[in-house]
Length: 470
Ligand code: NAP
Image (cartoon, rainbow, N blue to C red; front, side, top):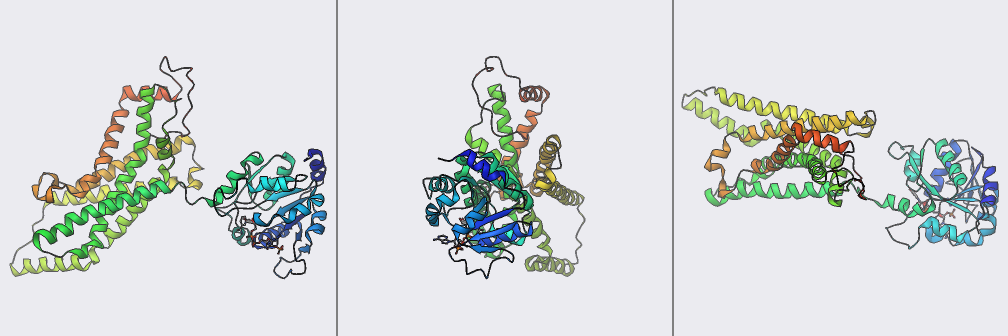
């Protein structure tokens, strides 16, 4: 049986910058030992081979596990879970000690029990704390901890956790208590995650890109080949890409705002904000930032590809031929005022839209958003966001200009690609316009402030996990 009083006695003397033991002289053990030594701790390694200490940081001692265990109150177990077996024999020496389990697995659900819980069953007399598993050995050693500064900690003994928190702080890290040891499997799953918030936006981006690219390929290249026998396949590289990128960007930008609008309609329909949104809507809202950043990436590509247009061989050749024809036929190229307006407005909308889009991206960076209060943040993301969507939509409309009335634009009875990309933005902007009409706006504001339609109040509902940015 684990005795709290034994652990308290053990921890009572766990002073800052005291002796810390590390079992295992591998990558993590060495990196952690180095940082601990730099922070002023005395580090003692427990190893199967105490004579082999060549790679260890200077100043650290290496002993057998048994000897090392007796020297320190707190022991980091920097050994893979598969090798925990040796700890059973050490159980008497580990009685009352704090064992910090830093282990990770290769895949989720690899073992029925979390590694830290398994450790506490192997050494029941010790107090097990799960921590440091989300920090990599490389980041510890190189000091590149900016994006990796948080140590997640869980365990059943508050004092033992405090001892680990103190160590984390003295290494310049932040510590976050994630509760009891039952949270260990959750912590062990964190390093196995691969961009969980980016998966859905990434799939949407790839799906949209493939669909739009295929669409413009059929309408431009395949159509020209089938009807006129012309080979313009070279356009795949720049022209078609530069048609598909802005289309994906515009649709994805509007997809950032659509779930907020849907949520507002749901709240109006339910007459309360205290009802949970469907899971798919919750998930959608959670990845709006990633969706927006991917949309921004496609906008960047559009800008880069557009800058490259004047240096394209195809454009150069066409301009040259056109100029030569004018000279040959002794004609002048008349200035078209309408065309000048159209082209300048199209460029102005695009440039302004892109500038605001970049601003939105910047404010989504944690360092910037942390300096804003919720009102400022939601004001930028909502008001500036919708303005950006409006400008980008206007950019696409001006690009098409009067194409939509020209039958020749409907090759094989299909509308030009830009028209397809306008469907979702139009929907979002019209619904938004509808939502900001005074009567609906008043109603939704009341609901957000906690008002409930009579009959809803008191019903056992669960709030959505997502704060709304509309
Ligand atoms: P490693 O380089 O393979 O080192 C593991 C150490 O465990 C070995 O150097 C060895 O030390 C000891 N060991 C090996 N077999 C053993 C056995 N049969 N019995 C007893 N001890 C044995 O692994 P690591 O990368 O340092 O990882 C250590 C732990 O930290 C793992 O649980 C890992 O999941 C976790 N972790 C690692 C990182 C990382 O970035 N590397 C990040 C977070 C968590 P001796 O020869 O001195 O006995």
